[in-house]
Amino acid sequence: MYLAANGRPDAPPRSSGVRRRVPATVLALGTVSLVTDVSSEMVTAVLPLYLVLGLGLSPLQFGFLDGLFNGATALVRLLGGRLADRGGHHKRVAGAGYLLSALSRLGLLLAGGATSGIAASLAADRLGKGMRTAPRDALISLSGPPETLGRSFGVHRAMDTTGALLGPLVAFAVLWATADAYDAVFVVSFCVGLLGVLLLVLYVPNAARHRTATSAADSAPVPAKPARHRALRDPAFRRVLYAACLLGAATIGDAFLYLLLQRSLELSPTLFPLLPLGAAAGYLLLAVPAGRIADRTGRRLPFLLGHAALLAAYATLLVPVSWATLVVVLALLGIFYAATDGVLMALAGPVLPAHGRASGFAILQTGQALARLVGAAGFGAAWTFWGQGAALWVAVCALAAALAAARHVLPARTGAPPSAPSSPSATSSPSATSSPSAPSSSPPPRPPSSSAPEAS
Image (cartoon, helix red, strand yellow):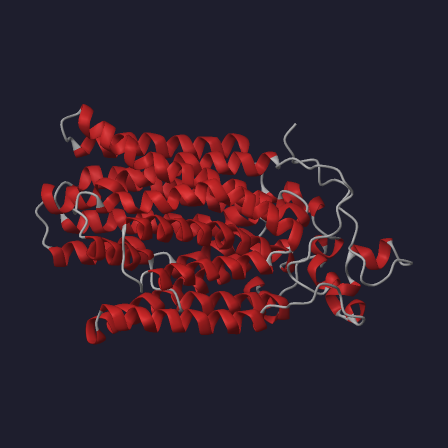
């Protein structure tokens, strides 16, 4: 594989000076995600108002449904990844996930005030998201050459975040135009979600059409072992997985950050929903530049620096909080997501074979999600028993320790070791057959047909 031949999972090959455009598949998937996020965030924005004020649910009932809405995707990612890798049905599995999420809006409409119906609809939405995420990211990673993955994921995440910003605005516009008719929000959200599915069907090719953009080793017959087992046996992938889980377990969750800001500044509850928009705006502006920097300098450094920005956000809250602190924390949170979210996928993608990429992404995303759940629960317990200040100090120390450990877990070499060609994956790379006279540390050539899926 490409990364094993180079000896590090973040080293892009040398550029020939030709400026590559973003693959058309990435732009199509970005459009699908933008439209789908408008649909999803319309519901997310009005859900607390609908459940608590509209239906009169108690805080305990709302807390249960909110946890179901946000925590039902972890294990479904593994199923979605494995189904996508069986026969290369990435588009089909992702489309099923998008369709399930769209249909969940109708479930909310038909549920009326029944708590069980609402819970089932929210679970369906989260199941759909869990099913589509890994196949979608696999399609992005297979749509172009490995050296442009950072920019590709950055473009996709920027378009995805645009939808997340537009969704609440559309929802409140619908509520204003219909005199707070929540059913109208659900109908519009369903129609927008179906539009996203239609765009996926019409404009996104299947992963099988992008196999020529991967190495010759990836086009070999699929081994009998399950893809998830092959991914876990790969040392480079395990290093990425361990680092992501270490750092994920040391994060406290965005909601806690926003709550700390709200309490320190005594913000009005009506302004609280606007705090995530500040971080999302920073993410939107920086996602593409961060991806391009990762492609040029290697993805390890931006990934670590992104978590350093999150550490700085935690540390900033230890000093007396002002309105300037609010701006700094939201900006640092935007930097964190821009430098880590898509960059992590770009870091892990090339170490995974094409026929097991969705499963590998699912393992990575599930591990990170579960680790973050542990981190958020730990911070909540520390806050409850020790108080806000002590819990924040624990979070700062934990993230600093995790960052130092991740720096050693992720490979730091800038070149391939002399013994790299002797590894099984290196000997099966294109560079070992097409360029036998080249030095072992030189990068493999670009795939000859990598420009096929690019935008014309």
